[in-house]
Length: 306
Ligand code: RIB
Image (cartoon, rainbow, N blue to C red; front, side, top):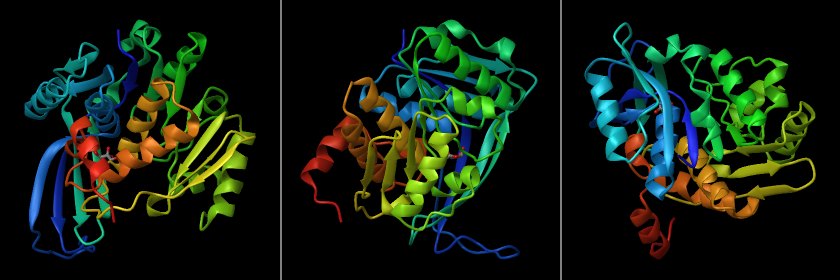
């Protein structure tokens, strides 16, 4: 039995770090690269497991070298892989990531591979039933994602939808979501409201609550986050860190938040904890590989971030 089940993709992230993100038609010489676990679901699973949560990852891989990389990384991180389908017909996905080492900002192209062929029939709902929290994103086909979200509500679980990458969702989605965690760009996609300040974030959250979502958390990058459940509102600044690579920071946030929620912490403490995990994840190159361990978290308490 797992505390948290995660539906999502694994892809091999191939990250290139350099002085800038190349423009269209431009070739630049970079300075380092990393090949490691990626895909929002996989990164979130690693984040939770490294903090001590029991995680089951529901996904689909190809029977190839990157599929082996996935299994090794997930096993190494103590993640339950018994609900991963290995397909002989499809390839494991990859993502090409350019990172600007000066700002930590990135540009990503994801080729999902095997999970693109995921069907509702392939989902064993007893995995979901046996956990306390269900966390997912929008990298799995939408009908499968909605089916699982509905099941979580029938079974009385808490669910969290990290609506990334942003895409058109039917009204049915908004009725079954407990926690909706877009970043500022994704929030703009769902509400049409451009977020420049706290007031805009408040407006955007209000609109999302009106759509039927119970709790909205809009992450605002280095500006922090805004939370609302329609009654309580919290604005929180981000932790100041020297960011090397922001890839996966949203995943670290969602993982940290789910873990704190599992531990029964109050919403403000869950947000504070998630903020800290997200900040720490930006201090290393890579996505899944940059998720902080408990040891790193403890060490960071003694270090003053800047
Ligand atoms: O959130 C970051 C992740 O998005 C990367 O690991 C990449 O693979 C994409 O799925």
